[in-house]
Image 1 (cartoon, rainbow, N blue to C red):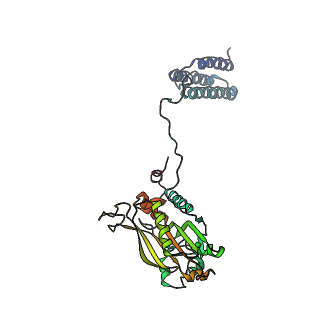
Image 2 (tube, protein in one colour; image 1 turned 180 degrees about the vertical axis):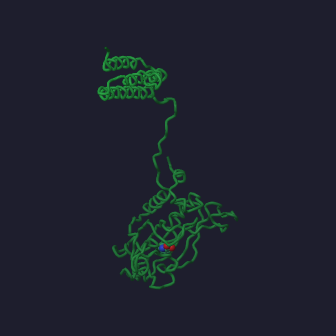
Image 3 (tube, rainbow, N blue to C red; image 1 turned 90 degrees about the vertical axis):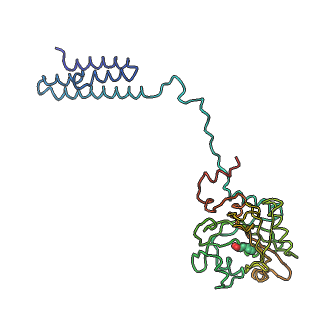
Length: 344
Ligand code: PHE
């Protein structure tokens, strides 16, 4: 009599042949039904035939049947995956689609303006200096002629780390560091980060960039200050930019001035201009002749030497030259904003 084992072997061979002939999903589904259907599947019927066996034969038969069932199921699943995979006859991609252009990145607009400013001053023979972002009270205030508790300190909203250490509120401490290190002639700029206790709004940021400038030599006068800044601003904006000097006060310069340029947005004509608020002028930097007391603080003889210094905010400058209405855009890291200034 044909044993269960024989039947299983026949079934295994038939199944292998049938599998080899399957070409599509429909044939696969039919094969699945033929073998596994609960009603009349070949395997279901074999399981049923087990009922007729002697009880002691049942466990071994059950094992064999389970093994062939697992084999059939695995083969059918493998076939299904194979049929689902894309056909190998043609390319898997549409070669007629235009390619995707990858974005190469570009300098951040603030960095870009900073580099332009550096280029202009390098051409005028200035060196580029560096200084720490965390400063002592001495460099940020005291040596710059702010006595302790002097009300002028209130103009700089300072972030203190402890009684003596602070985040520098301006780049002016680098003037002191450079004059301590080197004897005149000095002609330097220092671009860098500064920090102030401000809530961000369209015209204020708690962190921003400044560029400091310092010139010290024999016979430096206010005319040098004016000439240098005019030359710089014309190179940065354009030849016809209007420039005006207003008297001002800084503890470390005397006399002091604030420098305005004619509004780059309305050109002075817009009464409703949001950028210059209808004044026609934009305040762009602070400047002045180095105070003799500052020279004394760094052991330079104010009878022998004189000099001028200036400081400007880089984001403000970028804002005016790129016509950006809100300073916060610079640091939101929105690539849609930054990519607008990519030079390609
Ligand atoms: N440090 C000043 C500021 O932050 C600017 C300045 C620099 C003024 C140098 C005069 C000379 O406002």
